[in-house]
Length: 376
Image 1: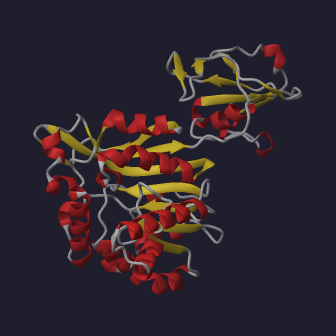
Image 2: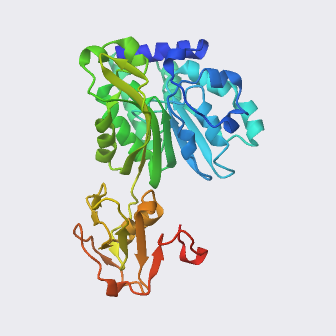
Image 3: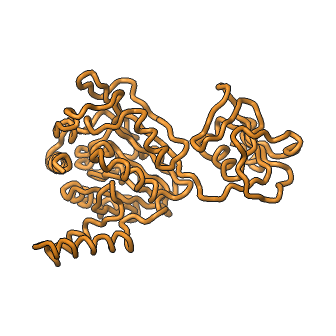
């Protein structure tokens, strides 16, 4: 709780006066900054640019939105059918972000951005609603405390701040490290809960090359400065895999550390991942071929793909391998005549005989394909 208070205090100061120590250099897309008020740019604190992963039509959730810079950048990319939700627990930062909402809505041609008050480790709780409830029914004794807890639980269950499977892209810019270690697993599970099946995450954060010792974690200045709360580099990836994400990867990795404390390197990274679709594993005759250059690779669901071999896949895995982030590494083969669908998940490394896919459509087999073959 002490560390959480230090974060609140540090970022309240950052909303009032620029705090250079809270951010590291980032090459943002200058074209997206032109519309933004200078105060939002100056009082934003981050270590990466997750807005680069936004697609047209996305519903985007920005965890720890701060001044709202990434939200207002993303709003320029989501198009007419997209929207952006920024969540933060700090009243001063929320006030700063909301200060320019009307102005930005006029510039954007519509109010595409909403800012809500909440904790990124529990995206069910609407803290604005909690504040209103506490004003109406203050806690004065044990009974009123119990009533408040019951009200909050009901509100979280029946009207969560961020609904299940509702977000196309979850982004964050140097905020996950500010959450208490005891809440980090729940935080990533919450990210998984709100992401749509097939949705993505793009998290810019600080990681450490070694595990951070407790005496550094106990330093409130290092913690609130986005340093000592960092996950170790392998630990970060493993946490997202454990939560259920696939295609988990470091898409950006700064070669030079942002800071070195007691010989531990802290550097900026961007992690990307995909939430698998909940479709059943149905076999209709698809196969994929891993291009190489490695002799074989494994995915996060335990499937193995030896180089150059036709590996049998279910329709769900086939889509992920040929249309998702793996698409540049695989050739997909759709049989000329699809088999009758059957519930089936091939043991790792199961081969698909060539005779079963002759005359089929080869996706991603050439750099110049027609639209009809859906090659890319």
